[in-house]
Image (cartoon, rainbow, N blue to C red):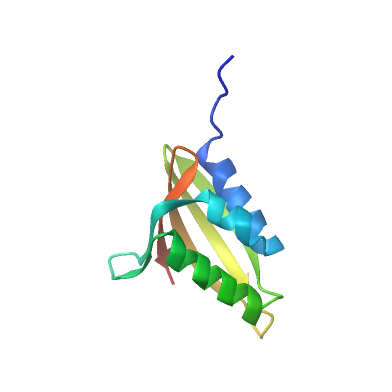
Length: 114
């Protein structure tokens, strides 16, 4: 019997949970090898799993209390839009919207709206 792939919103929740647990191995296993992080209608911030791994590793070291709170989420096809509040343990949470693209149970792109 063939396994049914998890829907994109489940993959994004899994990534969110891994970030909140500061589980670097799970975070990097969810990101595609060629994952791109960019600002919407702007420049590319990061490309590739090694660069993203280094960024998450630095974040987890510098901000052990950093957490993502999901304020809302919607999904259509391979796209998941998530309204997030990022608490880094210092003052007010930063709010942003992230558009996740998920293909074959991997996050291939994150477009940030800040």
